[in-house]
Amino acid sequence: MPMDAPPVTGLILTGGGARAAYQVGVLKAVARIRRNCNGPTGNPFDVIAGTSAGAINAATLACRADNFDEALATLVDTWSDFSVDQVYRADSFGVVQTGARWLTMLSIGWVLAKWRRARPRSFLDNSPLRELLTRLVPVERLKDMMAQGHLKALAVSASGYGSGLHVTFYDDQAGVQPWNRSQRIAMRQTITIEHLMASSAIPFVFPAVALGSPGHSEFFGDGSMRQSAPISPAVHLGAERILVVGAGRLHEPLVPSETRAGSAEYPNLAQIAGHALSSIFLDALAVDIERLQRINKTLSLLPPEIRGHSELRPIDVLVIAPSQRLDDIASRHLQSLPAAIRALLRGVGVSGQGVQARGAALASYLLFEAPFTRELMALGETDTLQRSDEVARFFGWDRRGKPRSGVEPCVECDASGVMQGNFFSTHKLHH
Image (tube, rainbow, N blue to C red):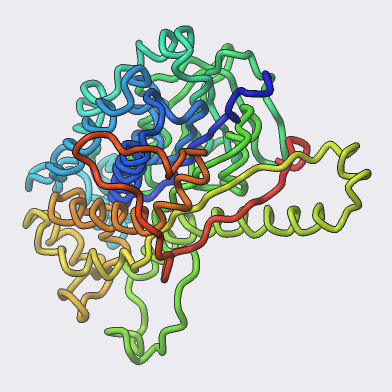
């Protein structure tokens, strides 16, 4: 790489269903900071990796990488005007065909199964999502985006139900060799809508998707399952600095149990499911970041002459995660869901509103409704703008440069309550 060439920049967008709206707000703020700092035009991310709903956002940016601002505007418009029927069937008949039958099978299904083959595959029918993705993500443009130099690589992760492996499907311009780690592998493939459907197939909630490779086919589900190293794909694909956008608070405050509604009651199915999904979507990222911190600390203890001969290489990682509990925000928007979905969720224990809500964590992953997604986008934008100086330093944008006409200069950041970015070190052998 030429000495004056900027470092390869990666973007990691994690999973979280409707929570992924927060990512769009973060990216909207990044674009604003770049304009304010008169930063360079073009796609700021050479390597883009996403999981679950984050994979959909990632693929949208990658397949429209020749015009980042336009791609971002497409995401903003989509998430600003969202409704659940764009993702899954919310009409009464559709709910009866999936969720209601699924709940019946949980209760008296062992009896019904003797008379009919009632085998619902998921809690909800997400067939509308395929139609949305066809309009939103022009996957046929991805090869051209890489050939024209707008992008180096796109990675999408999914989890194989048969093999139990976490698989990162990727397509790149440099021909990076697939990597193989314990319980996780990489496969170089042309990314399709089916890959996005598989990556975003929330366990139990949405049906698994069959993906094939030469001589082999397997059903895959949400890529957040068994994802022990979310930052790994961007590192393997050559990123030297990485922006990671989370979909939940990485460090929850210690809240006395008596302050939360229903905390003294035995948890219902919705609360247990919400807790399980949060573990799937959030915990791996926090663990991976902590691992990188430990590696960085260890590397810093080495004498400079030893570090110079080490295979370790520094990775500049900036992490932006919500400053508020997204469960609490979701609890204020439960009534935005269609009546049939509210009734279905009541069947598993989602009830109440606001501070009295129970099961809001589960609902937060399914709340593809504009009032909720707009609030998350606004939070993402606010959290990021509070760290404008930090973002500008990460990208190397000159804050002293004259702002473009009609925009305000960069402001001092106030990262109070928001996880700070850090400089971590890692290497391909580790990830």
